[in-house]
Image (cartoon, rainbow, N blue to C red; front, side, top):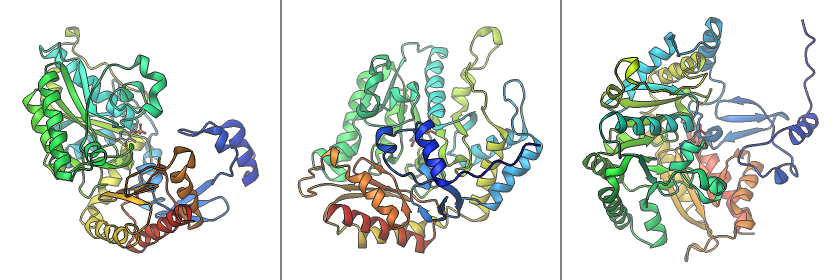
Length: 457
Ligand SMILES: *Cc1c(COP(=O)(O)O)cnc(C)c1O
């Protein structure tokens, strides 16, 4: 038996973090100049740091937590699966949690999606969708369909395949040279914001743009990849209702596969189990990750139709096989906790309970946020919110990037015991679906005080 390890102090952890770690999406020079919040535990909708201080988890631990932290039901699912086996492969073997979860996912997702392919993260679920789409057309006699289309400023994850459909100049310019050329549709938000259009006018322009690009280039397009209803990572760009529906009609007309990346919007986030439901859309491929395991473990799934799936069938020697996979694809512990999360959706009637929470959030934003001098726009879809700050909301003049306004607001929010994370000068609110009404009030109150303290003093 090894001796029990000594519990490191805050100072030890800070020093070692600064000495040994490289954090994601983080300027390390700035990071190592500051004192980190070191999380020790989670309880319900709160994060607790090593000094015992409690914070409301205002962004669901990067958009993935669903039912709160340290849920007995989810812990139990992990523990009992560990008692059976932690990992076994889906290459050449199968296991009950992967099989049962596939069946459940087909049940809960939009009609027509009937096959589940597992991977490990949102980025890989998109990679799978892209690769399936490209291969599908090669196998079905349209070999000229080799290009991909996506929405300008979409985000689909950080591997190169995912980046090729989700390009952002700030994040990805160093890799531009190796990325394939992708067709970019202008989403309604860009028209609305840049040209001061109403939602209806912006929708019309965006649909016209999509119609033109798809009729010109549809013949070469394998797939259109979109974040439905709300484009998240770019800064919460909401889409007027009718947009996704129009994209579905155009992609069907021009024989382009529609990929809905529901990595962020899936599992109740926008008020329905999946955002596509709000537009009565069944995509040809759907990507799931973040909330799939309730925010417990990395697991992802790409769902597709029988039409796509059956194109890959044939003798091994015909070379139609989908040669794709990862070592931990369909990990049993991840699948077990995903099943337990879906059980909680049923037993706690999570979706039915959302309307009241969403309305409370809307009311709180209307009453305490809209009136602030530097709040230029509030975009909400369910429990997914972007609050856009501007130096002058009247002219939509932005703050200078070096002012770091968004980042300063999130630091200020911590003094009010709330953890949030900005996207530039857009403050994101994305609490777990389990958030209580009084916690919604505290969240909005803390963040509005933080915005006032940074922008009005
Ligand atoms: C977060 C996100 C991804 C990437 O998921 P990872 O698990 O971080 O790879 C992909 N698409 C959307 C819409 C996302 O919000």
